[in-house]
Image 1 (cartoon, helix red, strand yellow):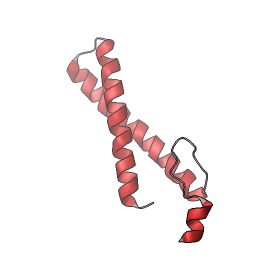
Image 2 (cartoon, one colour):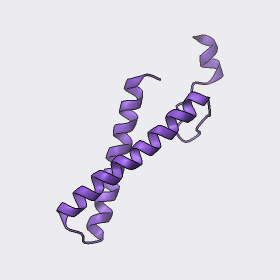
Image 3 (cartoon, rainbow, N blue to C red):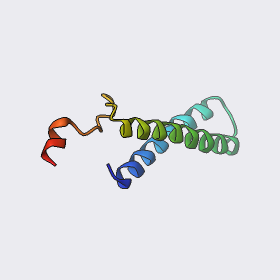
Length: 79
């Protein structure tokens, strides 16, 4: 898994969190300016934690059934 994979994964997580948190902030009736600052901050932090832990687990060879991004033993033997 190269840099392109991790950048795309981080962008997907960031955008997903951004949308969800923005909707929640609007439902809480916060102002749009306050919502934008809060949403970008928390989306960045959540993405940082998710990608960091997933990268760490990937380096250790831990499989993630939900992520489905671990190279299987069959694929490792073929390389």
